[in-house]
Image 1 (cartoon, helix red, strand yellow):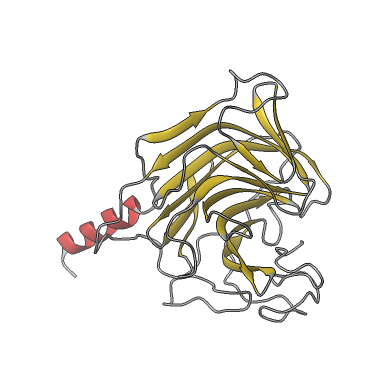
Image 2 (spheres, helix red, strand yellow; image 1 turned 60 degrees about the vertical axis):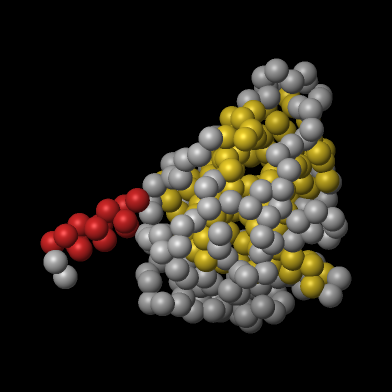
Length: 276
């Protein structure tokens, strides 16, 4: 390998660790919205959502409590927000950024999830939720954890990018996941937030319409996806620091029911992410 090719590779790799930036189609800080109301065009699907003290507050009263931003359906998109937990039914419960939520119910969607207990087990995940035979099922693409432990009210900035079939997730400005997504992920869809058994705040929201990925574009640290719990990584690419290699903990079956702590859905609650 020549010096020039090494330089080109290193440049492409480092570029792959950086945020993509595009002109926003929506920015929202909620400080112009009255307490108890929602900004114009924001649409609720489950849960209790309102602006309080200049922040959007979502309380999960259904398993998937969602709110959609007024940006229509987007294909190549980035969504980011400053988020915090105000309460959690259990430390394993979570909030998420959501993209490509297909219109109609039950709708498939892709999310970047943070559990309140993000520093343990699979505290962070990229997952795809879709209806299969009348039940909701999860396909976990990437999972890992990041310390230190969160405190109630502590803010963290989350960003999810999805361009073509490549998803990248950032926490506080640093890349934590990069992976190909399932071919079943819709080509375009709505954008928003999800809470599950938590009360959380969302603020300083920025949604961008990203330019399409050019053919042959270097992807940096990407190119593998853990299709389901228990799958081994493909292409021999090591995980990012702190990321799981997708091998199951003891007591779990790939894609099966719950037998302990792990990445399979709970029995009796189809499509529930790993509850640890």
